[in-house]
Amino acid sequence: MKSKLTILLMLVFGLAGLGFTGCSGSEESTEETQAVGFEEFQTVDTDTTVVAPDTELPEDVSDESEAPEEEQETPAVQADEQAKPAAEPISSENLMWSVQIGAFRNEEGAFSTVNQARASLNKPVYKNFDEATGLFKVTVGSFATREQAQEFRSFCVKNGYPDAFIVQVKR
Image (cartoon, rainbow, N blue to C red; front, side, top):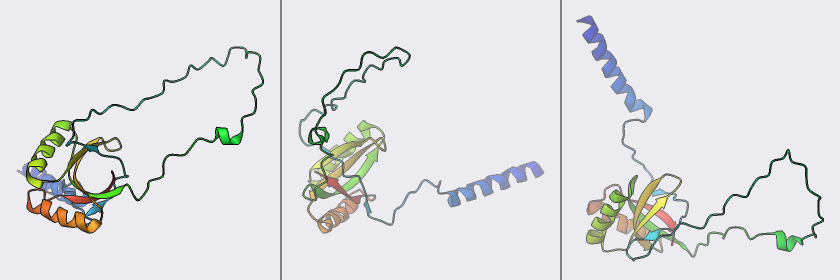
């Protein structure tokens, strides 16, 4: 009897401890806006094919134990030619507000949400794979102001997307 009581108490304290560790499973945010890193989203409403970007093959690495060949003089290159342009700065002209309605580990879940959103929300729907998190994110609409996105977010919440939140994206 004592062992059953001990096990029961351990279970109760263990479950009570989950509430204090953040492992409860509910991840509510008081902020409605979450940063997205300004990645470009793939438009799902068009029939475009996504192609992986070109990647460079690794160069052959020679064994350092080999004797070095005769060094040839290389002409000096001007600093202007060496400087490569930095990545394009994010222009505020390309930034838009959108409403994220879901994030999925598998693409099938994302496509299911895309199809449901198309039928019920009457706005362009976008699906994007976020390499940093490994999630397929589904967003709806492109709004010039945060206020417009906030109004549409309220519409989404009333129409079956209670966890919808506002994100800023590059379109």
